[in-house]
Amino acid sequence: MAADDETPPALHATDVPQQSGSGYPEEYAARVAGRARRRLGDAFGLSNIGVNLTTLAPGAQSALLHRHHVADEFVYILKGTPLLRTDAGQQRLRPGMCAGFPAKGIAHHLVNDTGAEVVYLEVSDRLPGDAADYPEDDLAVHQDATGRWRFTRKDGSAW
Image (tube, rainbow, N blue to C red; front, side, top):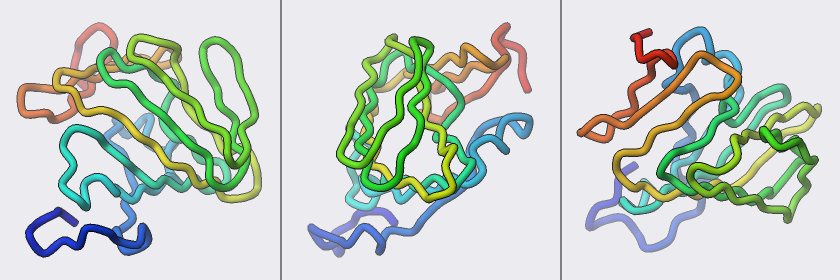
């Protein structure tokens, strides 16, 4: 759903279509199976920030353990108790807790290692030229000149 002159100034979040899947190479995509996002910011045509209402099924991960080079990220837990894993340790989160990840900071991701659904709000800026590294995997990603994400191995070779 893209904003236009007919987009109302407010919507119910569940009116925004839910999207699943990832851009990860096939070898890694299964680890985020069970993640679904409602791209709330896109529904209003926001171009400077991304806002997603994200659901993790039991066993799903938010992403691979990663750190962005340019973008800041923020998450706010609405439902469930995911495990926040970072390269500095781990912490159990619960509804009402939030976490922030400055660019070039600690690597991070959420893991739903429980039997119940996790729902959280994720917010990130959309500065151009972002990239991310994945300390546990042979994976890197960068935005090309069009803003599209391009995955490579850490040595720069293609998938």
